[in-house]
Length: 277
Image (tube, rainbow, N blue to C red; front, side, top):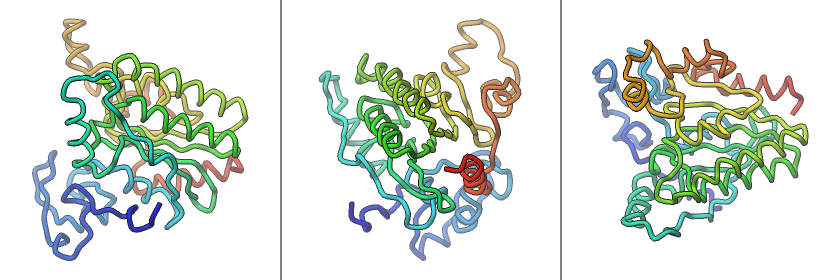
């Protein structure tokens, strides 16, 4: 892959890199305060006023976690097709490609973190909300198989609305397919670390996102299977405060730690060092 194609211009106002954009301001969704884009970028895309975590696209996420210029993409040629001839799916895929400037909902590859060579994947919410289709499953499965063959750890960053309905059962099959690859990777004595970001839900949460040896999350990330409104209507009762938020999930013992963005890279480096990766 050509280096120039990796550093594509971002699709949102926070990640533009030219001089003109640095003077722009963006309004925080939580506190409604205007802040300079440059200031938010410098603060790891976290609002300096209220701590709101702005969404980060997959390539930017990989750059934030990896050593400079160490990332090499794998399986980038695999793209989704309308296998079931689902109505309007072709146009949705095209729209997702234009919006995300990616050809699929996950980026996979090899990089180094603190000098430790590792496989890494990051899901992109800008591509159909990071939904899991056959190609997303194939890319992640192939990455785990590559990591198993090379005896490398895997670091994942998940954000997803779940399985992609336009691919029906083929999408749901990816849950077991990726999970099996994770198990083979684990049986070979390799390390898997996953970082849950907002939101990680549906079939992704119900499979490989929660199968890591060490499961981390960002502050305030929504983690769960069904959405809270669906659960409320099903149970016909109000949900407790903080339901499905990372802090509550940590209290219940489903994740191992909550790590802020400014500490994530160092945190991962320490884990890799402890495990002698």
